[in-house]
Each structure stands twice: as C-alpha cells, then as structure tokens.
Length: 505
Ligand code: MV4
Image (tube, rainbow, N blue to C red; front, side):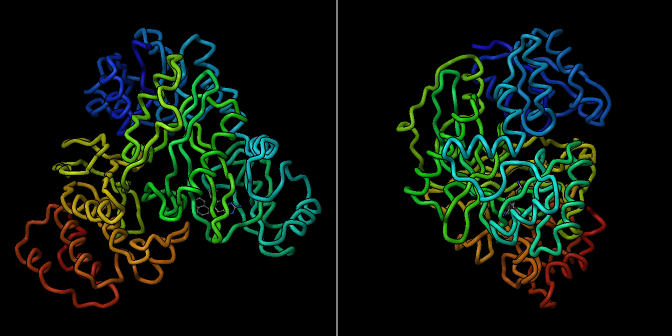
C-alpha cells in the first residue's frame, strides 16, 4: 500500500482525498498557493508546501513545481483530484516518467479518451453504442454536408479535443453549415489549441446519465450504477442524483455492461466515468469518458457504500478490486446540490468575499463536502464550487425532503451562494416528478417555475435562507418574510430588494 500521497488540488476535493488517506493510515502532503495558506486542506494534511501565487498557472497548474514537492517530501504518489491537472496526459506522463504513481488512469488511456474521435472509433469497434456521426475529423464543407444529409439534420459539430460544451455548433439545415464549421473550428482552436472537429447527430433535449466504473491493473472492471446529471446550467452541473428517475434495473444492467466494455476497450485503470446521452425513447448512446474522480462521485458512495477515493488509492497501490459486480448493492436514493459562490439573483455572477459566519447542516442522511470555514476568502482565482451538500433517503422523496431541510439549515454569510436556487429546484413540480432533461433549468426559468416566478411558501423559505445568509438583522425585514409577497411575477426578487439584501452580499 502507498505510504505517502501528495494531493495536487485545493478546496473540497483536496479535503475529501486527505480524509480517505487518513482513514487508510496514509500520510498526506498538501500544496497551496499564496491565498490558500489558511485553507482547510492545508490544515488537515500532515505536511503542506507553498507552490506560488494565486493564479493557477503559477501554482496548481505548475507541473514541475508540484513534482518537485513530491520529490522533496518523499511523496510516492500524486492524486490530482478533478480539474487542474487531472486529465492532462502530459502531466500523467511526467509523473510516470519520474517514477511516481499517478492516482488515476495510465497516460495512454487519458490520451485516447481525451481525443473524442479516437475514443468514438475505439468504442464503436468494441460494440459500444455511440451517437451516430463521424469517426474521422471533418476536412471540408462538402464532406460535412454529405455526412449531415446521411445521418439527417440537425447535427452537432464538436471539437475533437473538446468536452464541456465549448466549440459546439448546432446545424439545422444545409445553409448554416459553412458558418458553423468556421465558428466551431476557431473556438476549438482557441479553447483546446486543436482546431479539429467532428460531427454527431444532434439529440434534442437528451438526459445526461453517466456510469461510474472501477478497474484494477489486472483487467477486472465493475460498474457502480448511474448518476443522473441532467440538471445543469450553461454546461455547469447543478444537481445530480442516483438512481436516475428513468433508469430501471434492466436499463442499468445494459448501460453498466456498455460502460464496462468501454473501459476495457480503452485499457482503463482506476475510477472512471462513462457518460451517456439518453433520448426521449430511452435509447442511450455513449458520449465521452471522464478519466477522473468526479465532483458528483459522492451520490454513488451514498447509495453503494463504496468509498471511491479509497478504491482509487487501493487500485493505484496495485491491489485487486475487493468488490465483484454482484457485491455492489444499491440502497435508497441520493441527491447532490452543488453550492456555488454565485449570485442567482444577479445572473449567477461569481460572488467574492470573506466567509464570516459558517454553519453546516447535519442530522440524518446529510453529508457536506466542503473546504469552507469562517475567515476564509472566496476569490475569483478558482472554481466557484465551494461546497457539495448531499442527502440520502430510503426513496427519492425522502432524499428531496431532507435536501430541503438541509438547505434551509445551511448558513453561509459574506458571499452570495446558489442555496436559494437549489431550494426552488427541490420545490419544482417537474423536478419532483423526475421529468427532467438537459434543458430543464432553461425551460423552467422561462416558465417562471424556478427561483422567482412562484408564490409557494417554499419560495418564501428561500427568501428566509437568503436573508440568513446575508446576515440581515433588521426586524422590519425579518417580519416581511412572514407576509406573502405582493408581486406576482417576481416575489422573491421584490422581497429581497425591499429587505435591502443586496447591500449585504
Ligand atoms: C450532445 C447533445 C446532443 N446531441 N451531443 C454538451 C457538453 C458535451 N460534453 C456534450 N454535450 C452535448 N452533446 C449530441 N450528439 C447535447 C449536449 C448537451 C449537454 C450534454 C450533457 C449535459 C448537458 C448538456 C447541455 C446541453 C447540451
């Protein structure tokens, strides 16, 4: 077993990995930028080393500095968390060639799966069902048009080096092809330093369902079921859950088998995720893989009882999987709300400031993964994800009710957060019925069914939470919460303004 691990990350995920190491008796080495000196990951690790100024490029993305710290501290392995260097094949190669252990897949798998066309080719020949489209890059408008006519419009142009929605263009008819190709190419070039593009059939309003897998170095691969990730805003996931409301045992088995096949075809080792799009008729198609421990991994942990961070470390240590497929028994239902330091009342703009009071919810079925504590500064330098709030319930409804309860207990003052928005999602009728897809937030916001357009008591509750978050002390304002808002269109906003909440954020 590994004895000492360097965590090349910050925030909640660094804390999460340190916790796994501590429980396994493994020593931890943290790295931190100048503004993270007081951060929780620094306090919780056995050792911590400064790696430079706040900008990521000069600290958390500085490969040489991080490997230098591993050498100096005697760390044998590097856990990259997510983001930063987690899916950077060059970094994985560097770690491998230094004789260190990368806690994640081999560089070859990262490279293969990072190239979407190569990944599609591999998956297709392994018999995995992929979205109809090309397994070659697009060289000309004529080629693009003839492919589009074959698979049928609308089509989606995507970047070979992409993921996360950048460089994508929907084309609904032949006449839009030229301009879309040009736009997609230039965006791909600037975002991924790779102008190559390919084409897929565009699926309207799909669900995003992904399968968690574990693979050891001996070719054993298992899956841990699905996560439903359709609730997203501008390609940023907001709420995830397991099980997915549309996945039944039969579909789970079929998707799981495809995910295992995909992992084997890619020579995958460690924890990974196979993403699928599910269409309105519940057909599913492999989309892409994520070669990291994902933000939403805890919903899987909550329903399976498997500690994914520990499994990653065991696999990287060269151990065989301790679970067989039949050992994976799912129980109940889990939801994750991603708490962002963003202002839902101000177009979700990032919110910065010092966290001056901070109280986490707890009680039955509640888990909080965060890197927050009182006195810490939320800056614009890093991802606005500051905490993850998870609940578990015997069924989906209990998980939702617990989430509402936990959200209303959460107190974060000093920065605006998405907590009130999450409350409105939990109270949304369509969400409660599980009738969701990737355009849910967009559509429900338009219909006034999220955050603001509703007169329900729970929206008032959202105001109450928000007022608590904002350290609002005024008696008159507090009283206003108890009376029904006067405006039909936008009670939340009007009440919030009237109470002067804006000033406190
Ligand atoms: C698609 C799609 C529809 N059809 N591909 C967006 C991010 C990138 N990872 C893939 N994405 C999509 N690919 C085809 N052929 C719709 C999306 C998409 C999406 C996917 C997952 C989660 C949220 C999404 C939001 C909008 C579009």
